[in-house]
Amino acid sequence: MATLLLIDSSVFPEGGSASRSVTAAFRKAWEEQHPDGTVIHRDLAAAPLPHLDAVGASAGFSDPATHSPEQRAAFALRVELAEELEQADAIVIGAPMYNFTIPSTLKAWLDQVILMGRTSGEQPSAKGTPVTVVASRGGSYAPGTPREPFEYVQNYLEAVLNGGLGLDVDFIVPELTMAPNNPAMAELVPLYETSRDKAHEDAKAKAKALAERLAA
Image 1: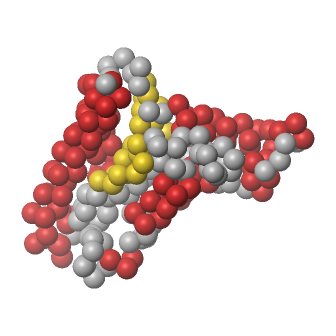
Image 2 (image 1 turned 120 degrees about the horizontal axis):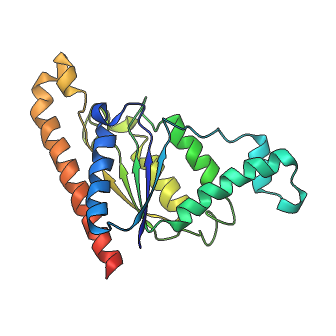
């Protein structure tokens, strides 16, 4: 049976989170295709991972046989996260834009899961695994918009997920999510609604297509 790794990082619950509503739509469509499959769900807001420190970092570059008790504990977490990545047949990541970039909890996951010589390096252990990133944002940072130079979510995640981990990256971008609650953006509500609806449809279609591909 196929395994989906779902990572949410929004600080808001599903009812108030644009990224969570789209990752939930992806999961639902996936489970309809794989009712007996496995979903590994990492909610980084509900259960944040520790930031990588000197103990965990040094453990990743040394022989496990030489690890101190502290290094063994830190390295065990990194191995657990690496195994979840490697077990996944597909990955979906909710990555809302906070202050022009990804949530710190998602950065913590990346720092922990990137193990040189295993998940990263010449032959990344999860190379080629399809990953769909739901990169929601309150405004628009699309090409040609005034805030295009401040887009540090897609550029960064493309580099680290593809360039670092060797994953096959695709983006779904629900934008203008603040429009319904910001009077200054009232005229943008129709564009927000179009973007929201497209994001949900894209998530369902992407999940179904990946599930069918894996089943073939």
